[in-house]
Amino acid sequence: MKTFFLTLITLGLMLTAHAQQKPDTVVVELAKTSRVVFTIKDRKDLPTLRQYDFQALFTDILNRIESKPTETQTEPVQEPVTQQPEIRREYEVITWDNDDNDEQWRKERSIRYARRSRHSINFDLGVNNYLNEGKFPDDNNELYAVRPWGSWYVGINSVQHTHVGGKLFIEWGAGLSWYNFKFQKDNILLSKTEDGVQFSEDPRDANFIKSKLTGTYANISFIPMLDFGGRGKKTRMWNAYGSSFRIGAGPYAGYRLGSHSKQVYSDGGREKDKNRDNFYLNNFRYGVRVQLGIRSTDFFFNYDLNELFSTNKVDNPKLNAFSFGVIF
Image 1 (cartoon, rainbow, N blue to C red):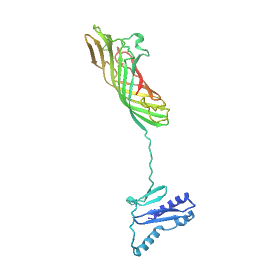
Image 2 (cartoon, rainbow, N blue to C red):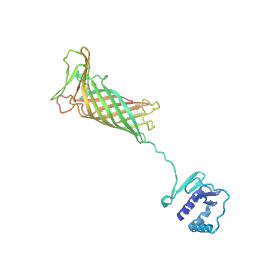
Image 3 (cartoon, rainbow, N blue to C red):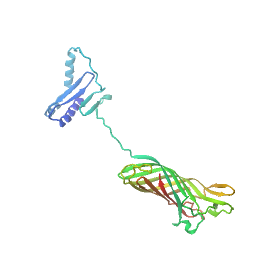
Image 4 (spheres, rainbow, N blue to C red):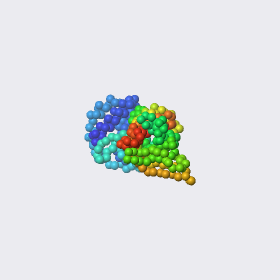
């Protein structure tokens, strides 16, 4: 009880610190029909009030009330709205929580926390090619040279866009991607020997339409981004409000889930030959991804640091795949 009244005095000090010309009144509702009213007109009285034994004073007041007969009330008593003791002032409510017999003061307030991460599903659409020791294979008329248009790179990614601080964000997530290498010559046939993968021209007398090699990969990526728009939200092509410039680069890694070759030709009718095989493709791929965003459009560039085919076969070509395109 003593602590309770000392707390009231402290509150009174806070009240009078803000207003000295008119008295401040603190009303403490203790029950349905009982209350204690403190009126402080001058803060000079505070040192004197601190010397009072309020516990003894309050006990004496209760004893005097109990010694007098209870007066009959002629008007009904209106029950207070609150269910627990409150100290009220015009511009705030301070609640005294006496649950579990602990004297604890609690000032209620709401704190709004900004979301640090946002999730999105992104789609990559672009083209593939590869380099043979830094050169394009078609420079030497290699049979595995590809057509960029038609060698599609397709990816679907689940991405978290996390704000680190300032203009720095992290885009990290996982997804699936498909390499499609459409060969320059439509009659290219893939086969395997003990020494590696072989590229040859199909000797059959048919009207070949296309030939390609496809690989499917599960990937993870971690791309630090600098977003100079300061919006804290990644923009995509379907968001018309994008007005920032974004750039970033980071690593990715993938695991091959499957691969196959496919030939399409006409021989009295449209035919498709699909051969599911690994063709000595590396099971793992890893590399560097660069992303660039201007307003509401984002671009990507992937470069595999390891070779497309296994390096322990002497006939395998030394190819490093890359892809570039648009992020939706």
